[in-house]
Image 1: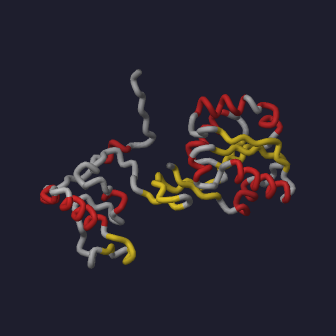
Image 2: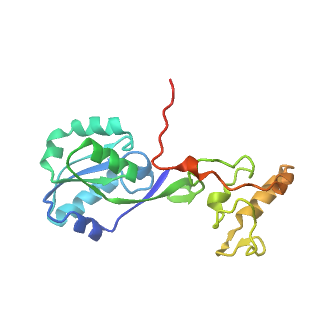
Image 3: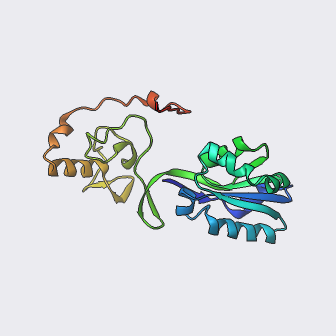
Amino acid sequence: MIISKQKPFTDILATLEGCAKIFLVGCAKCATVCKTGGEEELFQMQERLCAAGIEVTGSIVIDETCHMLRTGRDLRGRKEPVEEADALLVLACGAGVQSVSGASPKRTVAGLDTLFLGNIRRLGQFEQKCSLCGECVLTETAGICPVTVCAKGLLNGPCGGMAEGRCETDPEAECAWVMIHERLAAQGEAGKLKKLVPAKDFSRALKPGKLKVDK
């Protein structure tokens, strides 16, 4: 789940300066769950834009805005209101914004800030568990990612700042390596911690990433 938050409305208005007509694009997946770019948020944005004197020519919530072919197809299905607009305001993650900009020659404006890949604890509460580092070590760390959960991203821990099982950067946060040790011990695999883990091969996370799955 890609976690996002809506940019301040004043910032959005500043970005739209000179635009009299706007077409709105939302996402039915991540942005809807985050309540940043679903049907309700598009309706609210339309009301705020109209109150600010900006006409909304139309809107669409695409099933997966990061799906480039689907986004292009859905925008072609709204050809007239899209062409009438001066710009497209996209309430989706950065990947969705780029799908829209690649599918339309119109000016594309990002209405959200993309924050992180997150897990859902409960409705409206998200936590980052993975940093997309390209070389997963979860098998060796009892399913807890030290690259993400450890504030310092240590592959061999804990650090000297840990005190009573808490992280020195946040006394309210449990030390990732204490959690890893406790879980490995409960699984009878505490011996894994005796192994020195070498530096990660971050070349596997070079950008931009590409993957083609053979059929």
